[in-house]
Length: 247
Image 1 (tube, rainbow, N blue to C red):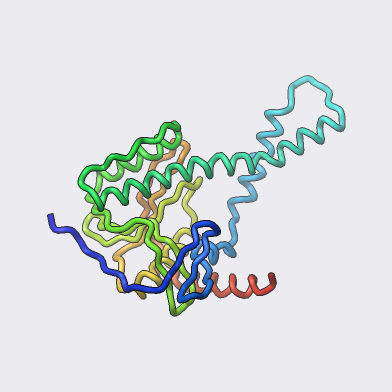
Image 2: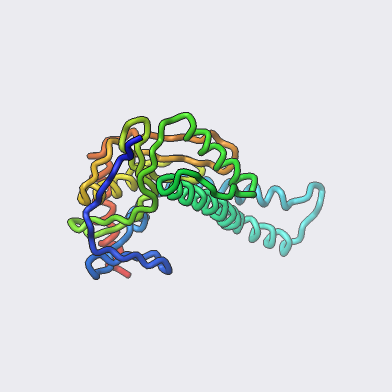
């Protein structure tokens, strides 16, 4: 089988793993995820409120009289429920993401894939769903964790993967979030802008959604137009620069 070859234009880009920062031609530039951090996140408030109410409900024992001090302590613990959930989910999401990163890298470098399967049940479920999706499609992995940047717009980023999926060159972003949000579409546009500058024009953008809690895996093709998402990303990038000027 003839392998697809992708050659990207060489640029002076340095990534600092310690603080996840980028130097483009010796100048610090924001990352894609940093830029879209200015976008609203309407799902977060009801999610945090739900976790708080559930935590308080679980801590209260029926038919018991509580003192003011005990109630305050229960409420305090309830307020922290979102953070505990976030940290736990982030850890499992990181494990799943790390597996996929290693898997994809090994897939295009070697003929035999020998990546140890994760032991955590939730992470294993995510990985199993991903492998099942891969079997259902014709996938040729081309690149993993690709450092890219836009010299025109002065930003950088790390693309999760580039692959040929069912005959179409596909820009892929892995997500282990609770759902699929419009900000993901805008994020992939940020990657595509930079990728096109480097000489590669993908046919489509895809969110490989890998939920951790038993939900169905989804190879989600971005439904919005590239033009719409490109405009949204560049607007977010401009807003980020204005806001960061106040710091």
